[in-house]
Length: 222
Image (cartoon, rainbow, N blue to C red; front, top):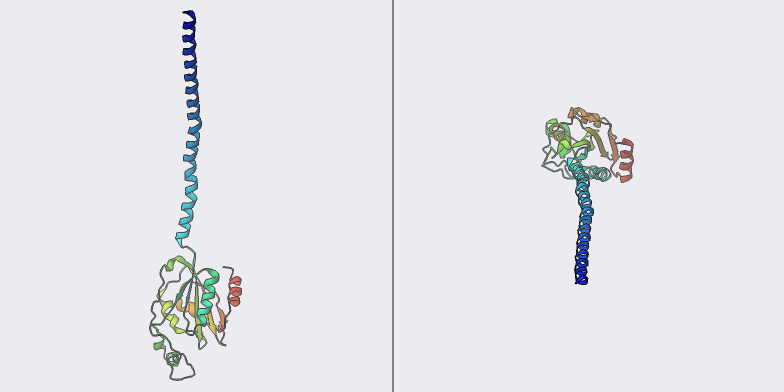
């Protein structure tokens, strides 16, 4: 009878000890998992914040570069494309509603359109397809390109100059010509615009190269 009682007591003691160990292991496991969950909750916002800031900077559009140009024969367009490529700027072509033909541009023909317009100032108000630019306020630097006509800027530029406020913008003229120099075309543009910080212009030859444009841009230190 004594042996049987002792065996029962030993069995109860072993069962109590196993239960106690199991409870201790569960408590310990719970204590080690809780910090991992807390760390994950505090780290998440730190990884999200920089992504939000980067998106905001990309969408702001501040400090942009715009290249506006009128090109009669394609030479000024070539220079404009080089500037856009090298600066990452946006292009905006000024296109007359009534485009110039090769015959129109023959200044050796006294009956051609450009000769008539040159001799009649009233005819120099050329209507453009568009003379204002979307998101104009987002551009801080504006390159303005044109061919040289009779020693000055081509008059189809007038409509654009009159339609826009250049206040607060750095404006950089550039032009192309077969032989004529820059002359006072850049200062004439600034006077016609009436606003903006206009820099000295640059004249390129009709066969302007990418290297010519790149060297000029590097000298501007923009």
